[in-house]
Image 1 (cartoon, rainbow, N blue to C red):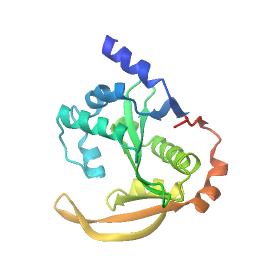
Image 2: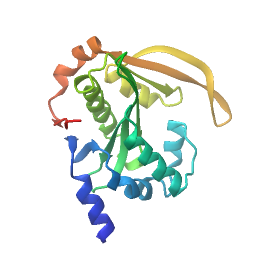
Image 3: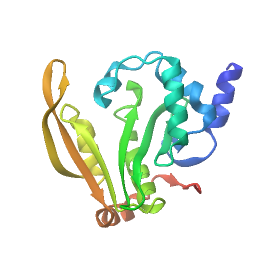
Image 4: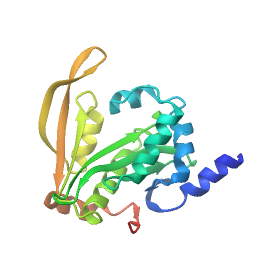
Length: 208
């Protein structure tokens, strides 16, 4: 392990939000920026780009600027999913936080194919959802998902999100029109979901 990898691993072990099956989730830190770029954008997995709706290639400067802006944004909570081997496997983001209305948007990305299909996405969604309601005191958490990503929609449904509407033919996928599915979970709905889900995952929300 070279010195850069050792530094990355040391930083990744700090400020842990929760853990499951060797995976950890914690707040992103300024020191993570270079690892975030090198481990996930050199190159960016094409399926990740397709499912998240972003472009397929970013420069180092673009990624580092995005990372810095995300950390400084007061209307955003930025978490990293860390794999058992220390890689940054994904991210969970609560953004567009409206303190007056107590609502926000949610998104998640699992960067690497080897980390999909393990139940990590559902665990991360639930952990971030709980943070949104317990720590941020939100009343509503919303998201959108593409119709060509049924696995993600199924995950959100399992986490208690409800379908609220469909933007028909709002995006393109491989030259074909696709829909954008709007979903959300409300505070009272979360209270019915959360109590039975604490088992099997370590949770320790850091002070903001």
